[in-house]
Image 1: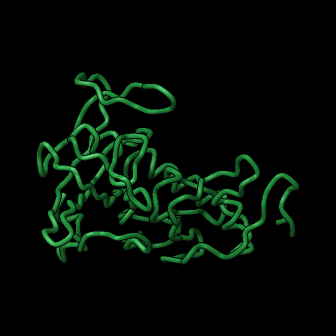
Image 2 (image 1 turned 60 degrees about the vertical axis):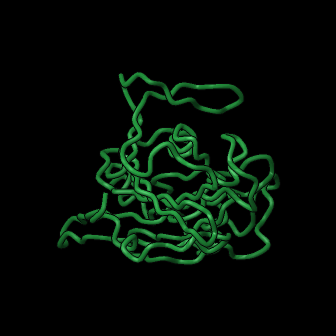
Length: 234
């Protein structure tokens, strides 16, 4: 790996990523909100920053929106990258997100399904049709003290802006999500909370992996205790 960034890339001022877990094949880190996956407009992206911080080449196997915080899984070699990318593509990795909204949803739990179409200026719309639908299951919890509703979301598909559009369709846009009409906030309150998958490495016993990462920044409502094992709930 080169010792310096290309001239167009601004080097990091600090080491922004905390380690959630790692093996010989992959590294799971916490992504702060506001960092994009890839470098653009002279701003170093997550992959470049992580490679410099951990001093090794890394392969992204999934992505999060720039405004989203939480778990990012990076492969440490090309073989692991292919294996993990296939698990994501085949929906064999269960993903759970936390979101928060000050707005009242049309329903408190259930399913959000519908085709997604492009809107204006990079936004997306949820349609009533279901030819190739985006599918999300969710439960929610209202914090009386903070007067905020916390959502636990499990996307079964992986469309662009899927969760942000899903909550907007419920009338409960995510706090801080200016694009989709969320209440003003210090950040966009969407967080990749948990990944669950079976890691089958050639020549080794399969390992059931559960990666959990609570939000590190923001004024979040209290998390219900039973949400720490959400794969039993959704």
